[in-house]
Image (cartoon, rainbow, N blue to C red; front, side, top):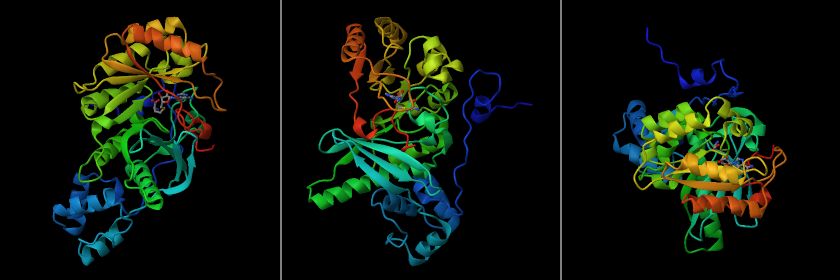
Length: 384
Ligand code: SAH
């Protein structure tokens, strides 16, 4: 008999040193499906099955939700009264509630959103210029991994976010931008031009919902964001990177890999997931991800003082990544109360980056954004 282990089963096999955390709860299953979390194709199938509606209804309902951002079925005025009533009985338009919006000195904003079952998640809006922003979104409540430098890890792992809860972070942010523009009498509403799955959680550990959320966010019947402006960041969940490769997702969106060390003993310590999938195994999986010709894979490297920041590390990083067409995102550690690490000195950071650049590695140095409100990389802990 042929039996293939599912991802969850393979991840929780007992033969390894390190174990991925199990969720403490499941995605709440509402009596009626939330239409905000259906792709347009799924919406079409559902509308045909439940209401006997013609196919073009899917485009209309999808546009109401994702372009016009309506809050009720009554507002979908090109649907018949009968259809609107039937939707009211059989579907839901549940929302995340916006708890707080904090603004940092540099204009970065952190939204704390509340799920219907009472959990807090965070999402960050980072201005690029006066017309455009990058949004950093969460994929889980807490995280199943335990990267030692990351504040989210201190929360433990509650559950995956449902597709609609991922998409809703963007919808809520767009509403906020629209209402601000209106109250300021601005000539235009700034747009969310880029989305990065770098908030709370490990997006590839919530593969199905993340994939469906990408399908919704990039659909041009909605307020489409181009796939090339979307990046999914992973701590190195190798079976999921293999699936990402198999399903050709690398041709649609960008992949970022949090490498964060150049030797297995150091990576084992700062990212225990490395005890399961070593640096060599991880890089072998990344090598197999087909990407479009214009696209490079990104490697993130959090610089931790006296842990992974020596000249030797910089040189090893160059040789590890030599074969990749890639960018390196150097992120000086953002301090928070849950981690025992420190940021290297400015001099050390500059010297590290200089070695990469001299060796011809394309490299960005990330200045912290929103760190005065704990909104920078690795600081999201929903005020735990
Ligand atoms: N789980 C995913 C996405 C969330 S973390 C991942 O691991 O990639 C997003 C990025 O922030 C990762 O590159 C991570 O290494 C980095 N990061 C985490 N904590 C940090 C901290 N305290 N300071 C700076 N960067 C941090």
